[in-house]
Image (cartoon, rainbow, N blue to C red; front, top):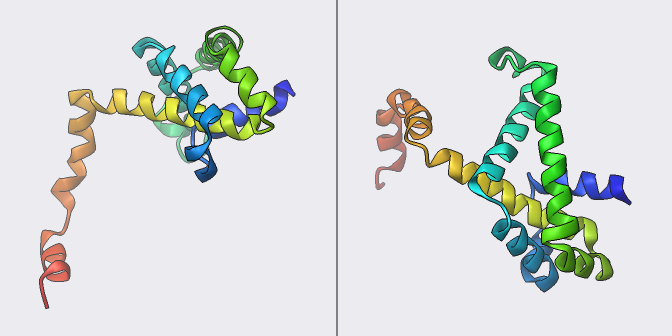
Length: 150
């Protein structure tokens, strides 16, 4: 059960099941998770996601995190998830488990938390500047031609 929960949490950080939008217990867990994390918690989550993605063979060259940093980040996130699901949001966790949709509800809740983490990072002016650099290279003429009224 713990292994299934862990997989659901990880998957939940990346994809939201459409059914969960109308599920009150899943929505309550999502809200509780969001309400019980700080900006620091969300930055730790974003760091963990970044380090996980940096392990991909095509991304490895862009990050130089060592195994100790990856392990420490994993420990931090394990502690956060444990606190959220066994303390801060225990009643919501129990409700989704009793409803039989535990895995899917955890995915929904942690996808929301992952979004919050990304929004916080992307709000930083230096991140916004880096993300806007691509605009210099857009072929404006092609856009104008493609989108011009016919």
